[in-house]
Amino acid sequence: MPFDPTIPPDGAFATGAALRGQFNALKDLIDAVPAGPAGPPGPVGPAFSNVQIGSVITGMAGTGAAVSVTVNGSIVELSFTIPAGDAGPMGEVSSAMLATEITGTARNPNTVSDLVLLPSDPPTQGDLLAVIAKLNELLAALRR
Image (cartoon, rainbow, N blue to C red; front, top):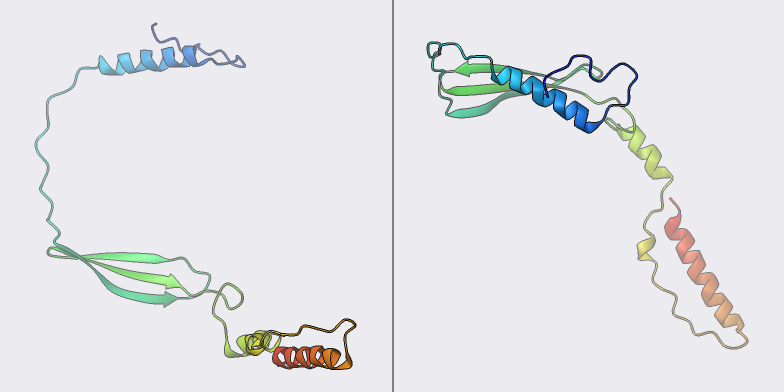
């Protein structure tokens, strides 16, 4: 099928067969263009033996990251500038911010051992006192 620039017409439903035929026809036209003579060979670039990091600098928050490249003989050196994060949940955390968040957390409830009690039926006052003592131990561990 020869290339037809009117296929598919505007607003028409395009089918795979019609588009495939158009693409194949364009490829045939491109392949038919004769190649010109070969040009002269280009210059040979330097052979790099090593890539190293030159410096990594923290830039201002809100700026873009940047990298510079220096070529010294066969060594490529990369230097980076990486922006600082904003203070807050996604950036640096100050000591005050950390202290504020820790204040609302439990100390260490892992220190409270399991309550091992096989209560009587009906439970006795001793059973109830054991449960109260364990709850008080847990509450003390949870407090800051």
